[in-house]
Image 1 (cartoon, each protein chain N blue to C red):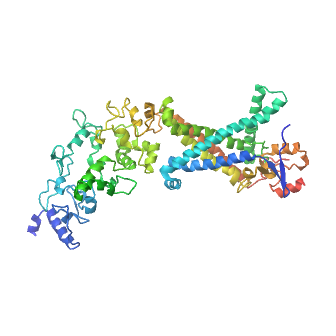
Image 2 (image 1 turned 60 degrees about the vertical axis):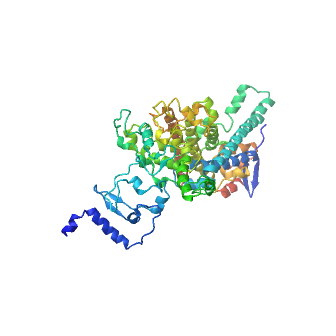
Image 3 (image 1 turned 180 degrees about the vertical axis):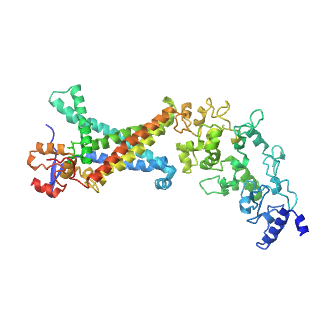
Length: 278
Length: 352
């Protein structure tokens, strides 16, 4: 029996549990470290730019900024390793232990649990993207009914996941070039520099444009969606982004009658929604 | 008027200019100017149009000259053709003439001829091994192309103190050399050769004049715009941020123990950058002493083109494509999302 999702009510509004304290701390650490890495790395990538020397000087210039970059990089790698362990532990404590308790533990079932894990991309994500395009192009007024993690969130998760792996590995190669080139050809430094530098630019643009739009600048969340601090997501956002999951949670808790109509069937205003629910 | 016409125009204009300038500024004393050349050449604006129609500024800034490496060289040391005042137009300076200093070990008058001999055997020689002029030899640098005083920086042997001649160092000299003039003369001369008087960025800027010139690069069939590609490495970027400790062009292209004037093409077996020798460059005791020779196979002058390295080219292309493929659709969705929010209920097919 899976643990029920906590729903808190405040001022007549429902808030759905999304992120544990552990996850929120990991996210904040990730955010701070990535920002420091971008600020100390981009002036090197774009060293000819007018703004670069000023930004670099803020971090101590060529003598200090690379040291800060390396410290932040090492911390990010440690965070990444911690997150990998965290993933394994939570996966074990969740689906694997459940299989064990039901005496159904087998490699095939563990693999199936892994593939069907809510954060793993699935065919539904492709359908959701197609449905979103239909919605955005005015073909329908029905938004895709998002699951626990939408395709956007999976992008937000797997993007940095791939990015940290690439940049961490290439960064270590460049940092320890003497050691690396004992086993690898010298040209690997060139490949490491391309990967590190270009992936960093992609990651920075992705996070500061796409992720920031979704969690800060979109009219639904501006100035920010506070779930990354509180751990709870408002009912409005659950309806707008995770409608399928929202219905599932409400049903599990026997609150079918309180389920709000999907986004697009009415103006997105929580007061009206609350009235409907009440 | 007929008398005036017989006087050469140059001499006439010279005396007229002198007469005019004499009223503008009183004469100063010229301590180092034995030939009294600054009598005229100290005046800003002293200039003429030469026989080829080129503008020649003849003004000598005494302050700059007195602080230059050639401060103690008499004017006639470089301009031996000038024997009297007023003089005829001076000949072009020949850096190879015997000049001002008696070289202590040989007790002969000093000359830069040895530098020229080294240059003649280097990659920057104007002639080939048979003495025939190289193709496009006019592109090969002469002394002044690299040795331009404005790039020289003040001496500061103890860099952390302040720029200029270090008093701490001079104190050592005074023990034996009583005259400050002697100290300044030899200290300047010797120490400019003991440590680099240009930072790595300055060095790169000197090489850049030719090695990043697209026409010269194309004419001499060079594989890269060398300073541009150096600038894309960590060394080049650190040089851009005025890091003094990182290697510049000369650190890798000049064999340890040799002079910059002996630099060889990477095709020459005795060159440090030759395939068989370049493994020693990075593992220099002062750079990456623990490095294996493989580190030197790192492409310092990578420009990400197909000719140079198809592997790097396609790897770079992959990331550029990935960036475009990720960001452009997402930015499109963002734009559509913003637009859609203006008309939340509009659609071709309505939900029932």
